[in-house]
Image 1: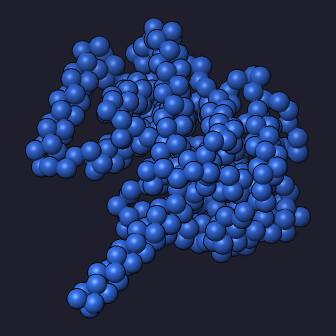
Image 2: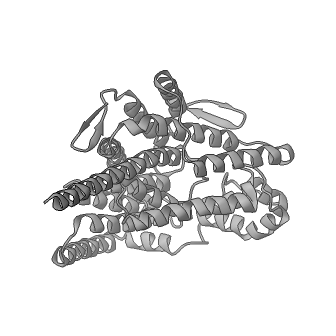
Image 3: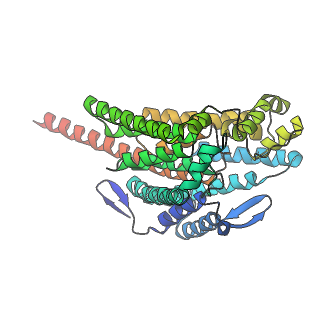
Length: 412
């Protein structure tokens, strides 16, 4: 290991590359070759295999370091709850995914500390560029069909092959989250514009919400003077006006605006709202939790209804149903504590920004066992630890300098 320009560098980039490959593959779960096999209700993908290779590489070099106590205790708690609840309500793939995610966080927390925050950001900017390039190619190749769906099919997302098994809404979510990794790039605003256009074309409400938050992060990072802020916001307002005029001129505005106002009237939101309607009743029937991934089946049993959803699309409510009152409060406390820490630090950590976007998306999407969350969290813990050590070293240097000055003044 070497130290240069106050940044940690490392000659062995194999773990870094493996983590990048694992993250990229975790986004590409809709490819047939990517699904290897299914066991015990849990699907095994290529990114699981890459993560296993990463574990072996990490074990060859050093012992696995556990994440901070709050994270470790949380995963231990939900595992115990799921084991006891599983005796009554059964086990799902979420149980094994939680264990996998904890191991993945520990692996990254162990090996990731050898790399600087700049190295991590470069890696994810490369992944982000590759991902948005694939999305753009997919859109260009299917543009005629997308426009046809927008013009003639109401209350439904455009029909399009997606890289993520979660559909085009999830594709728009990932590309919006990637925006934060381009804040320090000269062309970062262009990436954000591209991501916003994709969310608009896909009529992704969540994608646009995340892009709006990412825009605030961009403005905070790159704008220093009042004049710069006025110019930036005026430019965005101008671009938005042009975009709206294009939508109106092409006739796409009717679908886009209808889609944004169709909450509760289109298939996606109808199913989710039906699940949420039974949340309080199902939760009050068992405040100790139904076990990892059993939230939807618990609601289905209580309501005698059939749901095609595998999660209730709100990671916080999912935690309350899966892990009970204590588990839900624990989960919520970890997220609130993290957001408060980032707020106090003025959102200086890039991976902290990405996690905030993920947690916002978790209000409307996700199940809480996504490997992307584990990878982002593992890297965040590494970079946050480096920031703390750097601050500690700077403080010690300043104190040492002040002591030397004080001694010199006394000697004279």
